[in-house]
Image (cartoon, rainbow, N blue to C red; front, side, top):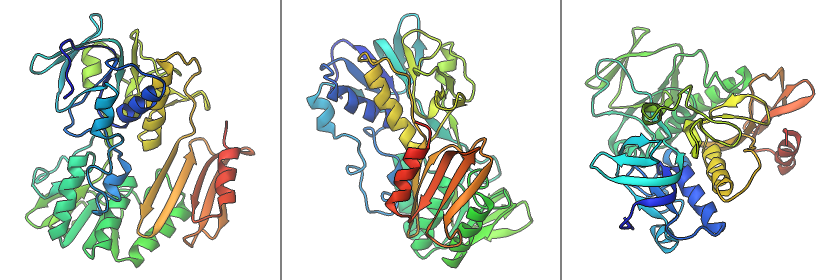
Amino acid sequence: MYSQDVNKYDVIILGGGMVAGYAAKEAIEADLKPGELCIVSADQALPYERPPLSKGFLAGKDNEQSVLINTESFYREHGVDIHLNLPIENIDLSGKRLLGQAGEEFRFNKLILATGARVRTLDVSGADRDNVLYLRSLRDSARLREALKSAKKVVVLGASFIGMEVASQSAQGGRDTVMVFPQDRVWKSFFTPEMSRFFQQYYQDRAVRLVPGAKVTGIGDGYVSLSTGTKLDADLVVAGIGVMPVTDIAEAAGLRADNGIPVNEFLETSAPDVYAAGDVANYQDVLSGRRRRLEHWDNAVKQGQYLARRLRGATEPFRNIPYFFSDVFDLSYEFWGVTEGAERTEYRGDVNSPSFSAWWFKGNRVVAVFAMNRPDSERDAASQLLPP
């Protein structure tokens, strides 16, 4: 849509996700001229917010228009050219061109790779059945929302961010819900043992059955087979077993891939005038001195906004404290920072209740904070105590 006779732009964003939506918004606020920016996306939808896909949109409270980052008219009125449902087959770095599968050609001065991530899929018998779903895109969420309307027995595979939110939505709809995960406790890679214990009890009290230490070995007609020898009744299976950065097209163009596309503190790749942002970017974190690749909503937002400023002349490196939030049942919590390298954890409030915060320390310095139903003073303190 909004096509021009000559597909040549100052900046092209490859990928139509949150990086693209927020980069466009920030660039327009910085006096972007019409025709300077183009978004090329394989998705069928305009850039949209991802958090509602496992929250409000999945619950039927939001619709496709309400989750858009910017309306269709916003892009048109500001001269941002958007090409949807257009897979790119090749990136010609030396010629500064994108080549589409149907022969389309787009020329750029600067390119932002925002190809995101794709879901990890099950590799077991029956994984290709129609009742086995994943949750990554708006289309995925719409399909899952429809499937939940008739589902009675739901098995959720995975007990991290997506698994916990989907299991919550399923159980709140009165469905028989089971959450299966290979670890010995819920979200082991993030929660402390005390936090896992609280959430496990909270889910069990709301009729979610937990099956730790188990993997799916097969999916049949109305059942899921587990590595423990158990068979679970299931008319819907939702797999939330992680994602993988989409680096194929960048690698084919000659860029190196290492847990995403490596970039420096300015989000620059090894190729001149080529940047990467969002889930696919393995960036140099100037706050910690370590490399990071984050799959958080906030990271995509901030990196999209940063590159819009960077390409308009800003000189500072990308600096951001990681942040995310989640809603499960009637609980809402927030998290700031990175727990990696923390030496101890302290709690405020009662960790066995729905109102507590967890504070991770390295030495005497706070490096991460989890807060759920706590006073605003604690939330303010979290942002002040974390590294600037």
